Length: 517
Image (cartoon, rainbow, N blue to C red; front, side):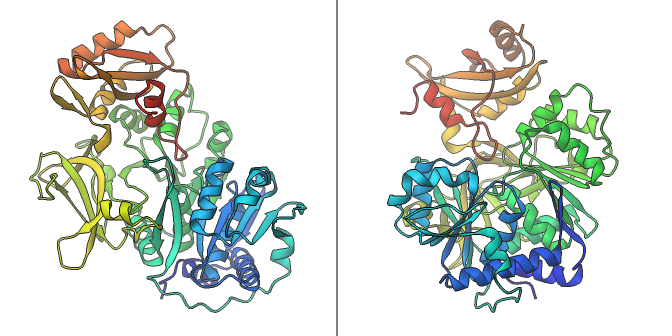
């Protein structure tokens, strides 16, 4: 039975021991190699005093070491947190102290972010560094190669069960401080099994991922390939797009997970015919909803490839997916609830709404988080009584409508809705129209304070057409939108601020307009 996440790797290492599990840069690792190295790390962590339920943080770039670390931590009955590789010292300090991490595993090039905060870390006892050994008086440290080669490859005994925590994933909080999403082995296994079911993954699949491992979408590419025995081709990032696309042919990639930012970048390329995509079976998208126009353009570029438009959030990993065969008839939908999950929409009183009505999406299933780490108040806001006694359901904070067939349509984050001229307006509806304007690569819409309108609509646009004017954009919107939805002002940008998961960061856009202090 596979009731713990590390069982994915252990089972597959026994079944496909010499098969390539990971391709990273010029190196290839078999399932047996990753299993043995993870065992060595686990035995080292136990020797360093890590006990059941202790937290171990991983602060690394996408790498083989990061993947070995997460499995090694699990094998030591501990809880892993993979931190964004771009995190700065202040946030790093908060997360390490908040999680009470006892050990940090990091790369040599990340050590400079630790130096300003070493005297402020209240729980950290040891650092494992991939690279030359650092001299520091604050913590004992050891070198990765010594840790791996100096410990037994024997699999350590485990006491954990499926209800125990596997990971704490830190996400941006509304107060500015990250929130730690607590996920059990059961939560993560349930999500992984559901996703691989509808993607129809098998041991012949080869997945190319450029997503950061700190982002649950990237993390699950590791977990899922170890579950179904596929191969993961891991890249550091999507920065060198030309080289990434060449990997699809070189490695005969069958699955390619993307986010809207990556889709926009792909669509800007002038000639994709030089690349061979014959092996590619599917594309997936999540993080933010793909504009309909982008979906249509991707279909024209990848006519034989199945495109899965999906919706999810860290608190439950995945919520819904749209079967590729429904893209033509329901391109604006993110689909139905994934297997082994139920969703419904409620009003502000918690009463279920009928089809076509706008309300908050609620999720019930074994994939929803246990809560926010050491934040009961925030937990109680989103985990509420469910349909049956004793169960908790997840209130997503996202507004949706559902049609009569059960297909979901994203409207807005609750706190992103714009109130203008007495109307409640979805930014996404305006953004979808802006994406149809020739030359527009990406668009983001926010509400700004206005004495007369309550909130005026402001649109930020990234365009490849340097001659595009504000009056042309507004005229296009007047033609395609109701009058109260037409932006009052347009600002052209050279790039968008991004969250660590690649979403456009509207909080920063609002700060830019003085809406957020």
